[in-house]
Image 1 (cartoon, rainbow, N blue to C red):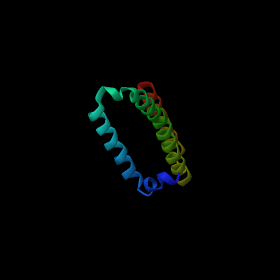
Image 2 (image 1 turned 90 degrees about the horizontal axis):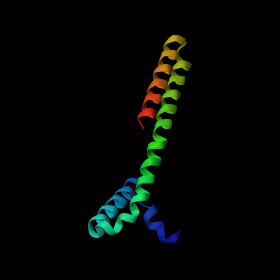
Image 3 (image 1 turned 120 degrees about the vertical axis):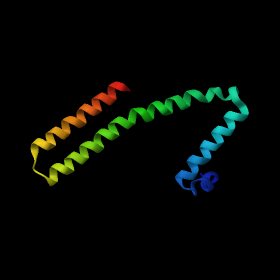
Image 4 (image 1 turned 60 degrees about the vertical axis):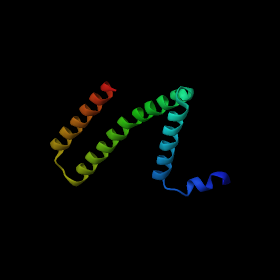
Length: 95
């Protein structure tokens, strides 16, 4: 872990940019020889897609819960909950 200490001193943004630049350079320099890395990228993108919908759903649910805690307008809260549920199901069906 001491060998990577210099790397962790940078902010997350800088580390992401370093990885992006290194990936682009490797792709341009080595071209088709780097095709073995492709499955890892596909798995990463699919995992990101898998986690996005539940995170959005629970963020919206949390926001509705806060609105319910502040107001006692049950009908409006119910309609908001139904709308969020419909959007979540529609987005899940698209993916």
